[in-house]
Length: 348
Image 1 (tube, rainbow, N blue to C red):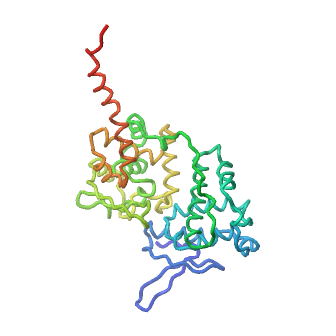
Image 2 (image 1 turned 30 degrees about the vertical axis):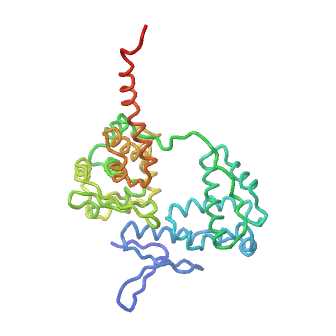
Image 3 (image 1 turned 135 degrees about the horizontal axis):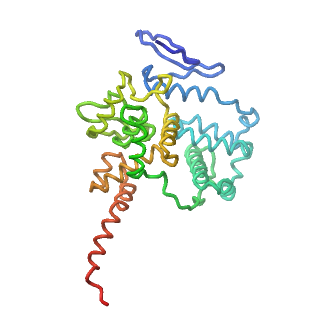
């Protein structure tokens, strides 16, 4: 059964190949190159729809060369921006458009570091959001300087806000057991958890996995993060517990193991929201999909895996993050070794 998607149209080239496009009124048609029915197809389709559905920019701002809004428009149409992953483009655009709502008509040439600091500090109550806003501005002006769209870079010298954060909560063994008791083998929630746990995938990866990634006793897939700029291919043994979970879930012949209630593949955001629902059902509202990845990384470190062994499983290219897991995991062991040397050496 075929489901009609809004704005989708098809034509046939001279070789007889069917080509799919998104053609929205008043917009240029966008080619969808992925195979229909695959998660990649839906991702391309949703990105094209999001672009087509954007509210028209005010003509005054758009025509005003040299304005912040005009610079953003130029950035969004650049090859640098288009080469970014969809999730990266989304948060960059949200951050820049939020600034443009209030300051879009202002001239970029008059923008100084103090203005950037004010924009950063406007979100000081949420330091992570403040730093993300600064990061978006840095990306914009880094491109603008290289593209000779402006001669000033007001982000130079502006520092991130310093704050204490441990990032996503790392699942404990007790929390893992609590989740598994609530979501037993055979359920969609349990399969989602096991995919995250035994592949160390992110929320973008788990909903893309299917039988085509499980062959010859191994799991092979390309991580979604930075797949268009710095792709990381994962090739790890299939954990027996994951194989058992897949068999118990009785998934069909779909290209993805996990499907929504409507029989469609999850988007990354949709999966993240659904997984949070499953966590709340298990009484774990503070837990997240990314925290499962951190838990497995920690478990590997506690089992004595080297940083390079962990990196081969998680896909980390920098040892800095891996070493943090390793040090935290070995802290108790090192403390015991240190205290054992002190015992019997103290004097009254």
